[in-house]
Image (tube, rainbow, N blue to C red; front, side):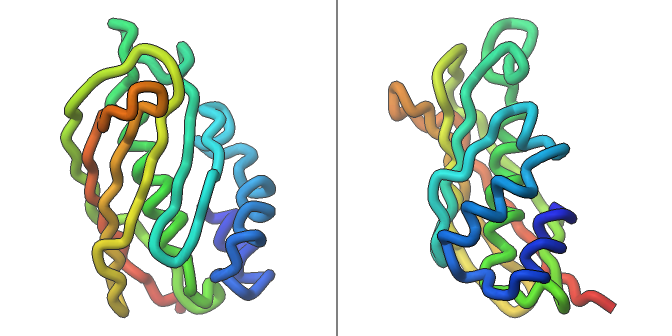
Length: 153
Protein backbone atom coordinates (compact mmCIF):
# COMPACT_ATOMS: atom_id res chain seq x y z
CA UNK A 1 0.00 0.00 0.00
CA UNK A 2 2.88 2.34 0.74
CA UNK A 3 4.02 2.41 -2.92
CA UNK A 4 0.46 3.01 -4.09
CA UNK A 5 0.03 5.89 -1.68
CA UNK A 6 3.33 7.48 -2.74
CA UNK A 7 2.51 7.11 -6.42
CA UNK A 8 -1.03 8.46 -6.07
CA UNK A 9 0.18 11.36 -3.94
CA UNK A 10 2.61 12.32 -6.70
CA UNK A 11 -0.01 11.99 -9.45
CA UNK A 12 -2.76 13.96 -7.75
CA UNK A 13 -6.28 12.94 -8.85
CA UNK A 14 -7.41 9.86 -6.94
CA UNK A 15 -10.86 9.82 -8.54
CA UNK A 16 -9.84 8.80 -12.08
CA UNK A 17 -10.56 5.10 -12.66
CA UNK A 18 -8.35 4.91 -15.77
CA UNK A 19 -5.39 6.25 -13.79
CA UNK A 20 -6.10 3.72 -11.03
CA UNK A 21 -5.59 0.84 -13.48
CA UNK A 22 -2.21 2.26 -14.54
CA UNK A 23 -1.16 2.93 -10.95
CA UNK A 24 -2.27 -0.50 -9.74
CA UNK A 25 -0.21 -2.29 -12.37
CA UNK A 26 2.83 -0.28 -11.31
CA UNK A 27 2.52 -0.71 -7.54
CA UNK A 28 1.46 -4.37 -7.46
CA UNK A 29 5.06 -5.56 -7.73
CA UNK A 30 6.63 -6.87 -4.50
CA UNK A 31 3.34 -6.84 -2.60
CA UNK A 32 0.94 -9.64 -1.61
CA UNK A 33 -1.03 -8.89 -4.76
CA UNK A 34 1.79 -9.99 -7.10
CA UNK A 35 2.44 -13.63 -6.12
CA UNK A 36 -1.30 -14.25 -5.85
CA UNK A 37 -1.91 -12.52 -9.18
CA UNK A 38 -4.61 -10.19 -7.83
CA UNK A 39 -6.03 -8.14 -10.70
CA UNK A 40 -7.91 -4.85 -10.56
CA UNK A 41 -11.08 -5.29 -12.62
CA UNK A 42 -13.07 -2.17 -11.79
CA UNK A 43 -12.94 0.88 -9.54
CA UNK A 44 -15.34 3.79 -9.04
CA UNK A 45 -16.43 6.06 -6.22
CA UNK A 46 -18.80 3.38 -4.85
CA UNK A 47 -16.92 0.12 -5.31
CA UNK A 48 -13.82 -1.79 -6.33
CA UNK A 49 -13.62 -5.24 -7.91
CA UNK A 50 -10.53 -7.46 -7.69
CA UNK A 51 -10.07 -11.00 -9.02
CA UNK A 52 -7.69 -13.85 -8.20
CA UNK A 53 -7.26 -17.36 -9.61
CA UNK A 54 -7.27 -20.24 -7.09
CA UNK A 55 -3.95 -22.06 -7.47
CA UNK A 56 -1.86 -24.15 -5.09
CA UNK A 57 -0.59 -20.88 -3.57
CA UNK A 58 -4.13 -20.00 -2.42
CA UNK A 59 -5.20 -23.40 -1.07
CA UNK A 60 -5.08 -24.78 2.45
CA UNK A 61 -3.84 -28.36 3.11
CA UNK A 62 -7.27 -29.89 2.36
CA UNK A 63 -7.33 -28.42 -1.14
CA UNK A 64 -9.84 -25.64 -0.48
CA UNK A 65 -9.37 -21.91 -0.93
CA UNK A 66 -7.61 -20.75 2.25
CA UNK A 67 -9.86 -18.48 4.31
CA UNK A 68 -6.90 -16.18 4.91
CA UNK A 69 -6.65 -15.61 1.17
CA UNK A 70 -10.25 -14.43 1.10
CA UNK A 71 -9.44 -12.05 3.95
CA UNK A 72 -6.28 -10.81 2.16
CA UNK A 73 -8.29 -10.16 -0.98
CA UNK A 74 -10.99 -8.31 0.99
CA UNK A 75 -8.51 -6.21 2.94
CA UNK A 76 -6.63 -5.33 -0.23
CA UNK A 77 -9.82 -4.21 -1.95
CA UNK A 78 -11.14 -2.12 0.95
CA UNK A 79 -7.78 -0.54 1.78
CA UNK A 80 -7.03 0.45 -1.80
CA UNK A 81 -10.57 1.75 -2.30
CA UNK A 82 -10.39 3.83 0.87
CA UNK A 83 -7.78 5.97 -0.92
CA UNK A 84 -10.40 7.11 -3.44
CA UNK A 85 -10.76 10.88 -3.32
CA UNK A 86 -8.13 11.47 -0.65
CA UNK A 87 -5.23 13.89 -0.90
CA UNK A 88 -2.63 11.24 -0.15
CA UNK A 89 0.02 13.81 0.60
CA UNK A 90 -2.06 14.77 3.67
CA UNK A 91 -3.91 11.61 4.77
CA UNK A 92 -3.80 7.84 4.25
CA UNK A 93 -6.16 4.93 5.03
CA UNK A 94 -5.17 2.51 7.79
CA UNK A 95 -7.12 -0.70 8.36
CA UNK A 96 -8.44 -0.95 11.91
CA UNK A 97 -11.07 -3.70 11.72
CA UNK A 98 -11.62 -6.76 9.56
CA UNK A 99 -14.20 -9.46 10.23
CA UNK A 100 -15.83 -12.04 8.07
CA UNK A 101 -17.75 -15.24 7.69
CA UNK A 102 -16.90 -18.04 5.27
CA UNK A 103 -20.13 -19.43 3.81
CA UNK A 104 -19.01 -21.79 1.03
CA UNK A 105 -15.77 -23.28 -0.20
CA UNK A 106 -14.08 -23.62 -3.59
CA UNK A 107 -11.17 -25.72 -4.87
CA UNK A 108 -10.47 -24.11 -8.24
CA UNK A 109 -11.49 -21.35 -10.55
CA UNK A 110 -11.45 -17.62 -10.01
CA UNK A 111 -12.70 -15.58 -7.08
CA UNK A 112 -13.91 -12.00 -7.20
CA UNK A 113 -13.85 -9.48 -4.35
CA UNK A 114 -16.55 -6.84 -4.66
CA UNK A 115 -16.06 -4.13 -2.05
CA UNK A 116 -18.78 -1.52 -1.73
CA UNK A 117 -18.82 1.50 0.52
CA UNK A 118 -21.23 1.26 3.43
CA UNK A 119 -20.29 4.70 4.73
CA UNK A 120 -17.50 7.12 3.88
CA UNK A 121 -17.07 9.60 6.70
CA UNK A 122 -14.43 12.22 7.44
CA UNK A 123 -12.35 9.85 9.57
CA UNK A 124 -13.63 6.33 8.81
CA UNK A 125 -14.48 4.36 5.68
CA UNK A 126 -16.59 1.22 6.07
CA UNK A 127 -16.79 -1.42 3.31
CA UNK A 128 -18.82 -4.55 2.79
CA UNK A 129 -16.89 -7.12 0.75
CA UNK A 130 -18.26 -10.23 -0.88
CA UNK A 131 -15.89 -12.92 -2.11
CA UNK A 132 -17.68 -14.60 -5.01
CA UNK A 133 -16.70 -17.75 -6.91
CA UNK A 134 -16.84 -16.54 -10.50
CA UNK A 135 -17.70 -19.95 -12.05
CA UNK A 136 -20.63 -20.81 -9.74
CA UNK A 137 -21.56 -17.26 -8.63
CA UNK A 138 -21.73 -18.54 -5.03
CA UNK A 139 -20.83 -16.11 -2.29
CA UNK A 140 -17.88 -17.73 -0.51
CA UNK A 141 -17.32 -15.10 2.18
CA UNK A 142 -18.96 -11.95 3.52
CA UNK A 143 -16.50 -9.54 5.09
CA UNK A 144 -16.67 -6.07 6.63
CA UNK A 145 -13.71 -3.74 6.94
CA UNK A 146 -13.13 -0.34 8.49
CA UNK A 147 -10.29 1.98 7.52
CA UNK A 148 -9.30 4.98 9.58
CA UNK A 149 -8.22 8.02 7.60
CA UNK A 150 -4.96 8.98 9.30
CA UNK A 151 -3.57 12.48 8.95
CA UNK A 152 0.08 12.60 7.90
CA UNK A 153 2.14 14.76 10.25
